[in-house]
Image (cartoon, rainbow, N blue to C red; front, side, top):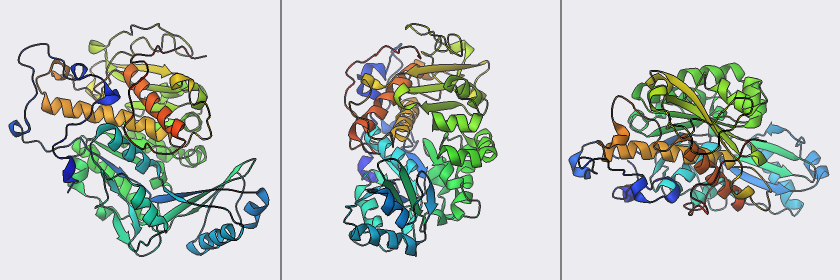
Length: 444
């Protein structure tokens, strides 16, 4: 059962914009309905299926990294015994360490709860025995209270941990998965997934077909597809994408509504280094795409119907796709909901030029995806509570509440906040924009 403390609170709409932008009334008939007037459950929460991993970041010398068996620039798998040996070596070297709750899907749904004020449900597996100071304790302590952990499966074994060892020249990674990949398919709560606003998972869950979580992820996506619930899918690393390219394409075509990735991962998947052209190719497989580009900002693409397209009121720009942002003021639809589907795109440079000091881009993509999921959930909320609004008139069934342009700005804004904090997760709601409608500058 979802956390009851959120049962009477209205969902926050994206970007802290004033209410009239979210409850437009074009006739006296369009008005909000009270919860008692409809029987639909509160279904604007999101569900995330993830490998439950706790992050550990350490800075040290190249020599020590080599001694403990880490490989510069690569990620290696560690058994629990090997991981404990590594921790002992780090302690003897006097290197400080602290655990932080991680996981790309968990980061996304944590961010969603802060943005929307709504709950989220986490699916995964972790150790049934948690003591003060161990990775599992840190994970629970640092997870937002709005994230429902009651569906996490407790298992004998250790909670997964991921070590990031930072040297002056490179990074090394060591992953001790513990029970993270042991989440079974029969533990997927069908009714919870089927009633959600969005299901979120990632390629990490599909990295090894011999692990139970692989089959759980496919089952969850199948449930969501059959229930009409949008599926958001994050890519792992470029190397993993290259290794699993055929699987990724198949999963996208069968299940995925929204794909999220960075520019390196999009190139690894499509073979196209140009982000706009890569996004255009990805839209042959999915309904919407979010691609973070580091210091170059963020690109989004999706579908609208020719009958409801809206031209931008900003300057029209051309690059590899002529006039790529002409219809960025349109709202997104799923391709199958379009009679005359039209691919549309939008781009934003880093919000306010980006943080003054950028030490890591970790978590930026998860934050951007959380912002888009917030807008999708807000659309579902508004369609339920103001069913006769002009924004929801049949036969058009929009996926998002806001335009593609506004979503691009919002995703960019939330990603900036994570980068500014130098943390993989938001610590609270994102404040007001300095500029409610920043001008989108052309791609260089």
